[in-house]
Length: 272
Image (cartoon, rainbow, N blue to C red):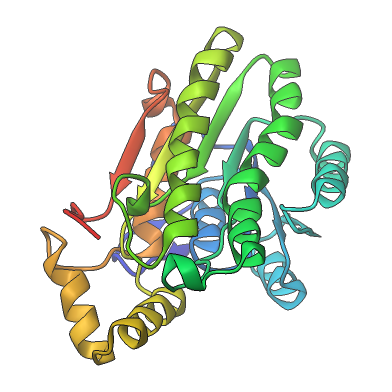
């Protein structure tokens, strides 16, 4: 049994979402944050999860917490790492039903003239090219299985320009293009492709983003946090579990005719 911060209790003996039991799912960056929340949610629903991450300690902790979880250390920006990961997944799983392209980084905060080419490339390599590399490996496995589901994790920044966060916004806009293009390309193969666009997600990563932007604009952390919240219609952050349950819905039988869509899980972020 798993208890979530939203108050929802999930039990593998009392599945809530049809079609998730025994589904074989890969989750990138699945040992921490949103990725781990997704892995935990799907595992509680009876899915078999395979995760990769660059944090070896977090991988071991996740593997211990999620019975039967396959964990592999890999950097999604490395073609060799991604290829090795999916070879190991196929050997362990025997098939693949779904890929959750979750891996990403916040990227640098700064004015465009202050950003280095290396910072730009690192952000796009992880947040966008990593999704391409993983999809490139996963799609043939899904085709061999007669279909599947791919969920790309974008951001509220996939819809809005984001001052001082140009590399991140550019990468996340790219996630929408990748999602909509693959949905058209792969639909005839019975592969659904969607994106989840999280908003301001509570946790250390968002705190660091707020802190960096506060420093860039010369105001306090609390004032900057207030500025973020006033741009959200519901005036609150979302939790990793909010994102996880939305991913679960898309993977389940309830989402069987949903493809090519970008679902904002953000309390309605009006601007960034």
